[in-house]
Length: 363
Image: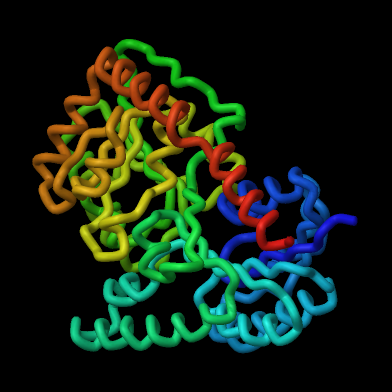
């Protein structure tokens, strides 16, 4: 008989890259009966995963107070053995699941207490206090979890010394990824994929683009605030921008295939200094060289195919963009990065780690 498990989120989209495409599908292929409890328009089965639909809403408060409880009761009806929680807001259900004999895994995609310090919540000391308070609450709820998963060893160890496990958010290399076809004399096509927010340096990218001839920028993702979008639109470089909007994770690669250089220019916020941005691995997996923020952790991690710049230094960004207008340099850098990713950074290896962890827990 298959062991029943449920993944639980109210904040992520139903077919999220990490949660659905990687973790849920990998567990289903390994023989687990997997349910994903998530806000969606309908319940369905896809790639062996049962998607259990919760009511959708754009209100964060409703998700916190109503949708979350609807998800809890939905999971209780499923009679699962393991519950895999993906949102910080949902960790409060860990004691309840524990009381009912469920084994709980908390998957912390980011270092939340550091993330709080980066949010616009007032003066720095207020943010530090809020981050500390959250950390204390989080540590209490982690007592009811059997494992704490995160994407880097640093985050995992900060959350728990004894229960931590690392499942990195590497790209799925078995997906059909199209190699970039270079044509001489063609406009250089830059791309950014992800959340379109201020701390991700979108404005800086658009500003630099204004100073680079024969270049365009494709933005794949959703804007958090219209006011920030308007700021970016006020830049001279905006006339070279192509807005795509949010697309399903399975369709992202077609945009990479029509681009030449990937961008990952994040501000040096605490939450990002020791992160592993999936977009950078995906760019490299498709043969794209990458322009990235010059965080020491990133410079140590991304050893091939990447060019590092100071996020606040427009001239460094312009210089890197112009440098990568060289077709021969793009091809050489992209190929080195592509080989490095395939040899060292595949989801296929991380999937084995996840399945082994589940096998240990289910015993």
